[in-house]
Image 1 (cartoon, rainbow, N blue to C red):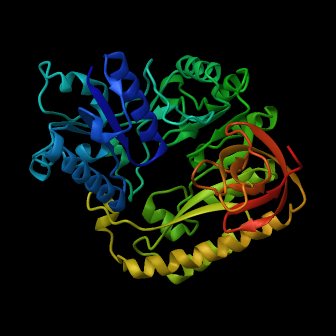
Image 2: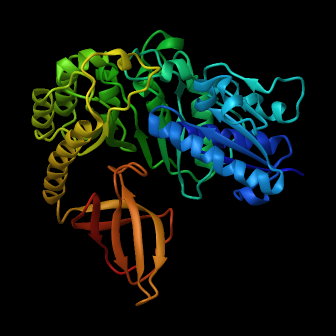
Length: 439
């Protein structure tokens, strides 16, 4: 039996596709391994959304190819990098054994078996669903990819060319997968797509995320349902009502706005009424925790735009803000805009925004010191110095990997994947410090 190792790079959407790939490989008779050194075949599932992601993918390929030189490992590359580079992949990495784009991932096992396929299969899209899946984490938390592709025309983004047009999965297929995940112990389900709030429009003729969430919320065993990647202009009243109706839908939403200045939003081809949309959400859901993403240094951005952005953030609409300096992708329309800004300036502005937002975050947590929160334990490790246990976890307003952790020191071990209650005592960075009673 051949052993296959899959290396997943990039966002959670890539993680889900890699898990589908692992499931497909297992169904074809492959043995799954996490150890590249002992694998017969390695698949590197790549990202190339921004320059740093592209560089990370290329570095990973070179690293795996170095193993091939030692033991004859067969190496295949999948996902966004082959989709971006097309047939340049062969000249850049002549040692690889094959590659597939985003829309032909399910054909990869057949390519490996050399059953009538060319070395490359390049069509945009994504592995949107599969009856096979091997989860990559032992924690009872996972992602549900509800759609693939994107129909927005943001000037800085190349996702539509890499992933194709927006394509929703059916409500039935998503509910079936969610039930299966819950039956296998999943307690937190995190909904993802390039744009989650446009879900259903392509197949039902209307936004249907509210209907999907209502059905997911009724599945036994799902304690937290979390929404990421909302698009501002498609957050409607029906969606807001669902948040109010179901307690297991986390009172948390990730809604990337990218900027607030109309000057910048116009150049980005983003909704110009973004500020009023955020205000509406907070008016109707005053206790919701919002996270967003911001780009600094976009072509044409000036000091006034940054000051406007900081002033908006200081109003406290968001608890978490991911700030990224502009990445100039030559394939994106924004690369052709005038008034390109130096990277050093973009980084300076990024730091200004981050500092302003951290003050907002700290103030928000300070205001709830002494409150009790429920959290899920993600890691428990014993200290050699005194035998106590370092505990890290997350509460309902912390998404995995991006919003920090709940942290504390315990005299007794706590079980990973279980829920506990603690009292908020302060912050360290973006980690929230708590205390708990004796277990």
